Length: 349
Image (cartoon, rainbow, N blue to C red; front, side, top):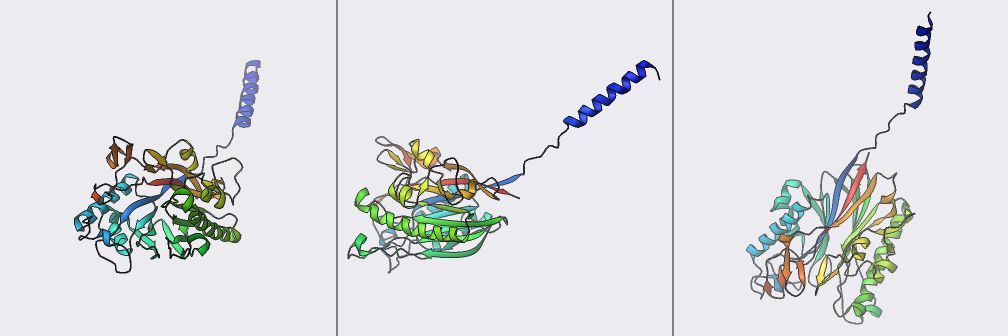
């Protein structure tokens, strides 16, 4: 063997050694399927039939509002246009729906029928007859349990005069054949009578919601919980920040923490309801800490509010505001007085 051949063998050996030494197995990230979960206050989605047990007379053809079949189906299709624009969420919470009939028409007589939605709904004791409901695509969510949490106010809060509000809807199910998800749909009492005067009612409802959430955690510290709704309070009000103990996104999140995904946008002055020129973040998405756990099969994504110019009205006095269906007895033909919100959800194998 000559010196030249020997030198080539030595060099080749070194190259092979360092090549093998530096070779690392590249671990590809686990692919995730992404979905959206939404919530929408649809502003008085009533049928045109007078229910003798509810104060719904204003939404009939004989009322000052002149609510009729044509306007009813226009609203259904307008709302479906919004659902289409937010890319047909896998799950969609609703509030201000009158009954089962309007939900059946919504999923059966509009573009939603092509996406195989069904729903969970209970009649609530609300005097006007407006309820909460949960729509979901059959192929993506399987209901295991469902319950309504009825709110029985003590006299110390409402006095001797009868007062009722919407139930809280709690649905447990399997999301996309991966893991269990607990969903709560809420519509807290309004601010009628003033913010401070009405606050005890919302705090009491938040207490009942928190009790149910704590019961879920007592059975499973790693529970995946999504709380959505029109809370008629903002993210830093007492019912949300203190009673429910839903905090902004922070570091070192524990599995049993409640994290308000809407708080960041609220702090930036954004909102879902425009009250005399001021944006209020009344519609929110709150999740349990486990949805921030990188080992969880279900993880949270981006929070957003859906807003396009075609669903808005520009007031000379208050600027851009959601184009509502009615203002008092005046028919505007809009979509809703609230913006819908949504939360991205990632599902891992």
